[in-house]
Length: 347
Image 1 (cartoon, rainbow, N blue to C red):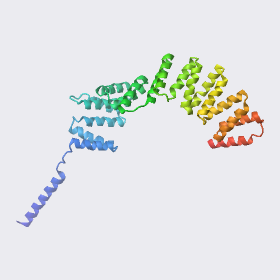
Image 2 (image 1 turned 180 degrees about the vertical axis):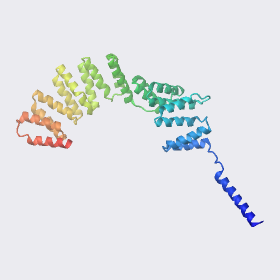
Image 3 (image 1 turned 135 degrees about the vertical axis):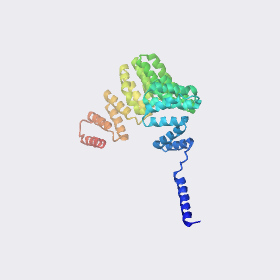
């Protein structure tokens, strides 16, 4: 063969091979392969790539419901809630959907509407999921959140019980709080008897929660049942030591109204005996004794408190007050300097 012709044929074959390799249409990726890539992108937080793959999926397979669901979910997360609702709502029109797919669609819609602030529509969608699967943990917990948002405490308590049952867990404090909130609503409607009943139920549900004792004491005080009010407030103080300041003024007022000044002293003694570090109880007792004229006893309590809390400005000031009464004004410059230094350290 003529070498020239051979070279031409060789170059032609080479060109054809290169053309086939570089210019033949690329084989399309299967929808499921693209969907898997989309899910991986979602896991990695790359929503832009995820959306691209998902849109490629639905272009090839318009019946791929999962892909549409994910597109809507991503739109919601990016702030386009109305776009998410439009996509998810359109899926409800599809025929022959499995029950599991229907639940997923209504779940997405429930979250969409909640994000939009349309709580009633969100609840409506969630109830569809609940009807299909009453033991579904997600929907029971979601409806619990909705009940809280709507301040429907009775319903919240019911969903809380269900969630705890599904989880095989116990949270009596949460249940007790919902009952207390329900009682507060009854008080707003001036229904004190029902409020008392609910608060007692809250205490029975969770005896170690302080909140119902405080509110029950408040109700009894309004009813002028001062002894019961004091009894409930004292229980509150023993449980919620750090919040004792919330009821001490009320307890003092109740004892004064009853004319039982000595009982107030016994009350503070009980509190300090159980919690020696309750600084406020010690200061209140010292102040009570001071008002009774028992200056030395009052000063002794303050001195003991100062040993435990040397940096307390409140105790320092009370000590100065008592020192003036017991020792005369004297030279208080040292005490004043100490208090000023403490104040500077705080500022």
